[in-house]
Image 1: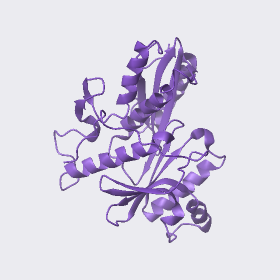
Image 2: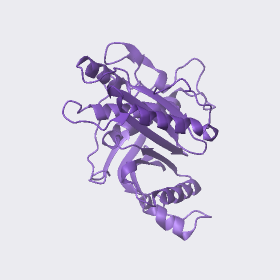
Image 3: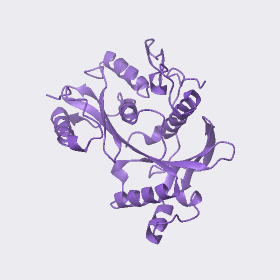
Image 4: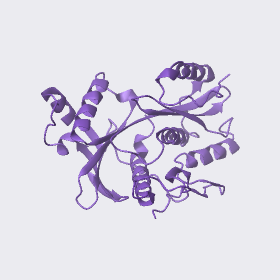
Length: 296
């Protein structure tokens, strides 16, 4: 049985990064039965152009930088590449490149996971380790058909002792941020101690998580995280995972609250964002479950 990643013991493992947000150099580590290489080009993983892929698609995709490449441990094959992207740093043709890279990886049977968030690159390795732990737990607890046994909680639903002494979901990546928000509220740095969140899944698109906490009356720290999973499961429900990551991102923003003024978003702006989300209900992979949320 794979042990849970107790939130009282898990510590962020930052990745040293260049000014553009990419890892500073090569590294290798093992986790959850996987071997992981840091900072590789797709060209180091895929060596033969798959059938049906044009020369332009192939040459463009091979230049794609992967923050992490996941292999089966013990000299096993490369399973997937993982990228962390700051939406504010994306180039004008990034969407076109993403499509070509996705097409090439799918044709080659190579998984691809993309995380989009400005706040998460400094804790990228911690997130990758969490994913590999979740996959290891999933694999260790599945029956011969690959299905989870009845009555056994999933990785995200394991209960244990939280940092504040309460019992809760120890594999909630937002647990530390939630506890820190309560402490910040007690220290009069926030007007609300609760980090709120929601999530959706887009048809043929990413899982998207939102999280926000009110710092001053009518003004909040707000984070949006998008997660694309192609041919490689992160081991937990995609929507809840995106929401947990968004809460984690809020926590990253709050770390320097006493010394750095964070970017704050007005309640009216959040209301417009929410209206936009509701207006696209036809594009959702599942019914919108947050009709009760309001910023009025």
